[in-house]
Structures are given as structure tokens and as C-alpha cells.
Length: 444
Image (cartoon, rainbow, N blue to C red):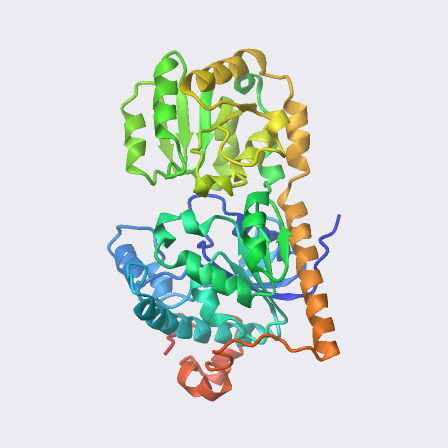
């Protein structure tokens, strides 16, 4: 099946960095869309703090690229044969700690002006004209950049409940609501998010998370089929029910628990002291299927709260693609896969379900799980996204043809032609004709 969207120019203003220590829905979707469309992906807006911490070796931030010592605009060839252009923005001012709305908006507006200059220049280099703009969970820039690129459609891709995220607590909900009213459509990754966001959107679509099926669907060896390890794939962060996990692990001293992923919460250290726990940490994406095959049963021990209620977990289809049984808490909308998982909410129920899966479900049901994951590949999800984009573009075209008024923001074109000289990158005409920015490129 071919993807429905073809020959479009798409600018994705993302929140995730392109590279990283975990698989990201935005990056997976972009990789699929890039097979048949020209894509510019604007990655996470790194700050001056990120650049400094990267330079000091405290983080893995690409400080040379952030500061312009390496090319900020890269053309990457993906494993699926597609090509995607990835832009690293110049360093932004860190503003997330600011409480006051007026000061925050003023400084964020300055960040957005810098981002506009970089994105506009990249579009010129790539020959982009009237693109589809997809903002991936970045309403902080989105509010200020809406309608600044002569876009034929502006879409907000929402994959988490921003009002429940601690890092976005000061301004996330306010700016997201404003941006959803500016955008032509909102695309959400789960049914609960769709229900929550569609009241603020002109149009709303559902594109659930998928899986790199070919990556995770590797046939297990006989040894791995007999594995007795209990595993978790993903970040140990604020979504995890550590009380449940700790009690469950203590109840099962004869079983080994393996956690593969970033450790983002100090509470995870409670697990490290338990003798039957292995915290592996982040691993390269290519190695994740091998880790999953070492698990006899996989788990999703999420808390049930506002943050997790809107989650369609990436890991569920990754587990299923490997044919593994899954035990999960009843954290959110499980209707799609409730018939394929065991649901438990107390430590005793959770431990019993894990033990049962290890003893009774080594081979049973794995083909059903694999078939479910196959129908939820990122290829299919990109097709769903493409259909949504096509519908929005077509409806916008009809509005323009009918002469209906099109929404124009207060800041329309304030960073456009009149300000071209101020925002023009320090690059010669000859350099602008080359496919990449030079390493020394700096923006005003």
C-alpha cells in the first residue's frame, strides 16, 4: 500500500530532537512521510544552556551544531531509503522558568524571531514554497510562527496531555489552547486526547501511535522463548507507578526484572537497590528488539492520572510485534488491545498476572499479538496522517476559492518581507545556492 500523501513540501516544527536515546512518534512519522514528500524537520529548540552543558560534556547536546560550528541544515538518508532535511536552530534563550505571562511571551517572541529567520532561510535553500506546516507538540513556538511561512495548511500534532506535564506547567496549556485556535486542524495520538482537544480545534483527527514492525518482528530463538525475565522498555519517568513496581518485585524474588531505557526520575533509584533488578539504561534503537526477545513477559506499570490518561503507548505495539505477552495497569484507554493484555492494578494482581504469563503464555496468543502490531505499523500511521493533511489542504483550497475570510494572526508577516534585511542570514548568494548551510553560518 502506497502512502496517500505525495509530492508535498512539509515543514515539521518539532519538539523532539531528531537523534536521541529513544524512539519518537514524530520522528517515525516524518521518516515515513519523507518517502514520497520533501520534508524539512526543525528539531528541538536547544537553548544556550543546552549548548554550554554539551560543551562541558554534561549532556549529549550537539553544541557544535547549535553554535553554528557545524552545518545546521543536514540532509540525512534514512534506513527506509527516504531523505529528510533536519535543521538545528540557533541557540534560544531559556525561558521555561519564567512565571509572568508578559515577560515570557516577550522573550519567547524573540526566540521565535530567531527561529523564523533560520527556518525561512532553510526553506529558501531547499526551494520550499507554500508548504504544509506541521507543528509537533511545540505550541511555544507555534503561537508566534503561525501563518509566517505562507503555508497552505497549519496542523498541530498533539501526542501528550500538555496540561499534565510538569515541564510545561507554567505556560503549556495556555499557549496550546491559543495555538489550536490558530491551526487549521489538530491531530492527536489517542482517543482521550482527541476528545479533550477537539473542542478547541476547527478540525480534529486521530492518528494513533505505531511501530517499526520490521525492526521488532524478529523471530525469537528457542532460548529466548524460554526466557523467564520480566521486562520494561521505555523511560523510567513520572509516568511510572514505583510503589506498585517495588512491591511487585519484592513479591517475586525468584524472577529477574530488566528495565531498558532512560532514567529520568530519582524514584527509579528505589529499584536499583533490589537484588533481582537490572537497570540497563538507554540503548541504541537497533538493539531494542534483541532486548525485548530476552523478556518472557513485558509490562507497562503506569500510574493512572491525567498525564497517562491520554497516552497510547509506543511500547505496546513493540511488545506485540515481538509476540510477547503484556501485563499493564489500567492507566487509560485500553479498548484497542484490552483483549490481548492482562490488566492488573494492585501489586498482588500484577505479580500473579506476570507469573501466569511466564508459565502459561510462552507461545499462546503470540500470532494474534503479531498480527495486531502489523496492522499498526508507522507506514499505516503515516498514511492516516497523509489523509488528514490532504483533507485539510482541500478544504482550505475550497475556502479560498469561495472567497471566505481566512484567519490571519495579529503578527501576520511582521517577520516577512519588511524585515528581510534584519533576519537575512550571513551567507552569500553563491552559498545560498548550495544544498547545505556552511559550518560558519550565523543568524541575526
